[in-house]
Image 1 (spheres, rainbow, N blue to C red):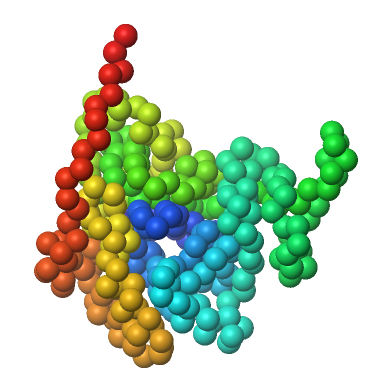
Image 2: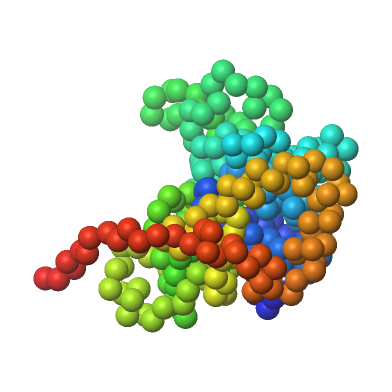
Length: 292
């Protein structure tokens, strides 16, 4: 992880750490904090705790997003302090507006059309949301510009050494964000033989041809979850509201669990009961016959 971030995440970059509810690479975010990257534009549909931590650590100059909060709990306090203190620029879209931006970027189109903004104030506060007239129907459609990040970081269940990456469970826009990006870091729970990937090709979301680095980082998505490996740490999300409510509490957390450890392995050693408490049970899917 240290090497991947050092090589591929640079000051001033547009950075995406994607994953919807699960497979959020907290380990990568922590390494970016440890390497003290600055002036980043952080993009994500739902910036939750990891971006709250990165904002508190001084990594971000701008946030591009569609919803910000601690899911099921409340506000992101570091994010709120930064916005109210005018130290963080924000650019807001709807969920589908962000999906459309990544889709346009992945397709190498300049913009994407949608009907997403009728009756809302977002175009008034975000001048990048514009409109075009459909050449076929004459209808006025909203548009959003393509988003092509410098680097996208995706957490996944498994990949081979070449970077062919497989994800199952709830999918977000990992594929679109990866294809839109100049560089892609894939972080996985386990590295598997190429034969495993080839035996189930439809599960491959991201191909090796667009991957810049593969990092094997078990438990790298905690406190979010990795389907089939470990569950969501709901206690952490609830506790984050208290930890982050004041700057001092958040700084103490960063000192202990981010700056105070060298990597994710040390992070896990500081929480010895975590693996036992959150380890996923067994619920296997039926096999698929790919034969002729």
